[in-house]
Length: 156
Image (cartoon, rainbow, N blue to C red; front, side, top):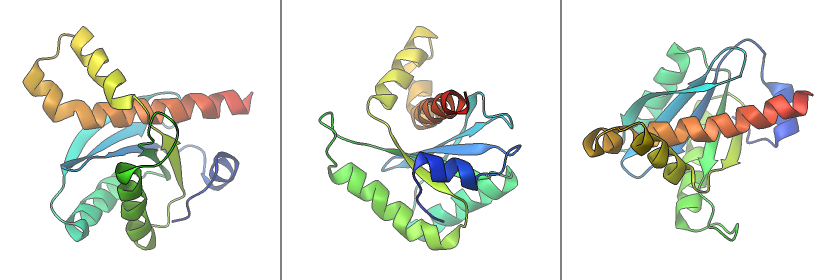
């Protein structure tokens, strides 16, 4: 797996297959998938984190089952754009995961994605308990949708 910039990512991703969005939390990995035309993202069930080898195997299995062509990973930057401990943890996870999966990957600024996802779920009247179990996948969908919108804009 190579971590790419947007142009290289687009050149490496075959059309007609879904792209996955990931939100790497400390307890769960939020997962979202695009449609095959890369227009919209849909949250998928979260992966409960246990230890890296089990997390990586569960993630790879889920991505393989959905025939995912590439991955967009939310990078939790600080509001000033700097990288803190959470961003470093995300980079470390992906550095360890990269040798296990050849799919192209792209880090995507995820500032406020969890806040936006939670506000959307509150406005949809999702209960607090259901929000807690779905927030990471909703954030992954928000991250992926941002990337898909940028891709659509770059295509003209």
